Structures are given as structure tokens and as C-alpha cells.
Image 1 (spheres, helix red, strand yellow):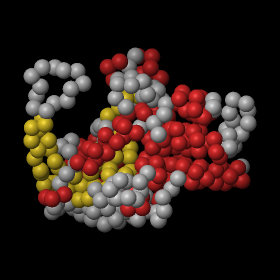
Image 2 (tube, helix red, strand yellow):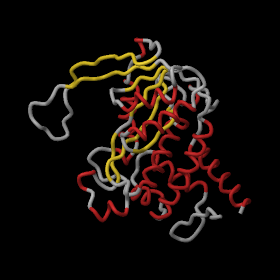
Image 3 (spheres, rainbow, N blue to C red):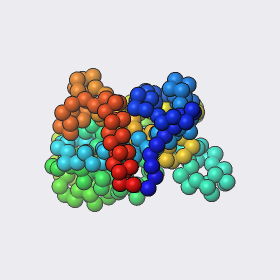
Image 4 (spheres, rainbow, N blue to C red):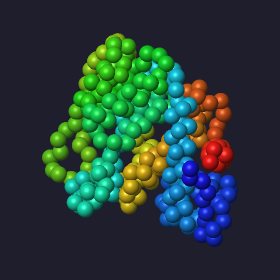
Length: 294
């Protein structure tokens, strides 16, 4: 079994304080190279730390975000890309990296606590939708009202995952077609239509506003989703690592301005606010268990 020991430029073991410093930089949206300059740790070491802390964050959230009592959820997610956009993927990269090109970040937000229940990076297709919605359903302990946009793959995915035990509605937005093609300019919003799909959804809570606002938070806080920048991922492993780390910080470390608690506290998942030092302590406990097992 791999012994998890990381070293900086001088060959010394990276201590807890330095790990906390590096992780804090990454959470705050610093690029890898700026984290190198701030923390004084080698770039390869930071990349290894990122991938390892990703496993800790993903495993912890997968284990603890269960039996949630959410009543209203909103699934959606922003678009990004790995290596380059679909139209620019060269044949030699396509043969080596099947994930190169566009990637969607599927996520589900609790409408009350603003907790992110789960997330899945992948294509915007029926297979990914089924995997994602099945995961959402497994984490809930009661009947729920999901509201999605008009993407048709949600229909079968929600039916397969929840059956008739769900109050499901779609909010389909209509946009005006632009008169002129303008680069990086979105179409103007025209109207929306609420569609009752299953059960008895409450019309007052048919909305995707929270998850759309969350998409903006993702693009603001997560370097790899910032538009028109060079912070995109070159490897799917690094992309998944950044997503897991940032969602740990979003759910457990950050205080929601309106709720005045962390999202995890508002959802009843934990009773105290977690710090980056707490994450590093959890990480080092995992390392010690692996070392003893080895």
C-alpha cells in the first residue's frame, strides 16, 4: 500500500501548518502556480496534496451526507471543459484522454439549507443523469419536491429513481433569439412555464433560482470554472479533486450570510463549523490509519 508522505522542495515532510496554508489557498481560488509562490511548496507536491485531499473530502461527504431531510431540491450545473473545448480537441489528445472537451457539473442544492447534496462531473446525457439522480434519491429520507429545468433526460431519471413517491415539476424558461450573433452574450429572458410532472408539487416552490445562483458561486469561487481564463483543468483527476475540495469548503467551512451558519449545520448534518485545520486533521487521521494498515 502507498505510504502517504509528501515533501516540499527541500525534501522535508510537509507539516500540518503548511498543508493548511496550501488548502486555504486552493479554496480561496488561487491558481496552482500562485499557491506555489504563496506557500513556498513545489508545484508537483501541491498537485499531489490536492488529489489526496480530494479523496478525503469525497469519501467524507459521501459517507456523512445520508438520510437527509430535504423537502425541496433543485438540480442543475454549470458547463466547463477539460484541456480544451470540444471543437478544439486534437486527434492525439482525443486518443489519450477520452474526457477532453466539455464537462458539466451536475449538482443538487437543498432549497432551505442551501446544502449541496451531491455532485457529478460528466456529460449532459441520459446515462449521467440517471447516475446523478439515483445518487440524490439514495441520500434522502423523505418525500421531496425537485424542480429541474426543461432538460428532457431528467424525466426518465427522476421516474426511475423515485417512482411515484415524488412531487416533481419542471420550470421551462423561454429566451428570445438574438437578432445579431454577439460573442459571449446570452439570449434575453422572455418567459417561463411551470410543468407538473409527478405528484402534487407546491406552486410556490417551483423554482430553480437557488441552483442558478449557486452556479454563479461555483464560477466565482472555483478557479477551474471561471469564464475566459486559463485556469481550466488538463486532467479529469485534477478537475474532480478541485470540485470535491471546494464543495467540502462550501458545505462545512463557509458561513451562509442569510442562514448565519454553515450549510451542513443548517441541514442538521453537523453541529459545529469546520475549519481548514479540521479538514487537515481529518486527512492526517486517514493517513495514520493507512500507515498502520500497511
